[in-house]
Length: 112
Length: 115
Image (tube, rainbow over all chains, first blue to last red):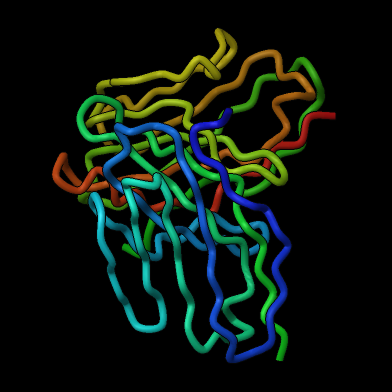
């Protein structure tokens, strides 16, 4: 079992839809949870990060962490064609290693 | 400073040749990370530096791979005797200090093709 599982999709939605992206993980030591956006043939771009459990909102994006279920989510409201990209979840344990452990990424297409 | 830069952006090489990639981090960032990403996968950690000290290496970093950050600024990643399995996107990231180490900012990557 991989440490971080993410459905690769693809996911296709109409413009204006609410998008829900999710990851599950198995390592209880993970305390930092990040979402990256990656356009084709580009480097990942940090969207949001959350420490431990809870919600965080930034504009149209909301990140949620449920440590009891080892489940994290990213919601995108009022999705736009420019949101079309691959979304990667990433996690880091507290203390010790500073490596990010990534999911496979979910490819999202928002259709005009 | 607009972000992490990597050179070259693309590299095509023949199997058995050596290649070297360069990464210039965001100027005030003292931590620098290397990752590798293959098609359809998320990035996988290779190694990281705090200033010039290499603090962690992944098991993915075989003997043919070596990374340096000689003056605590830019870093190089060298692959010796390249193999077709080395074909991937090599990503560099940087972060600022121990309190923000989880905020890793990535460069555009170097895409390596081994023929």
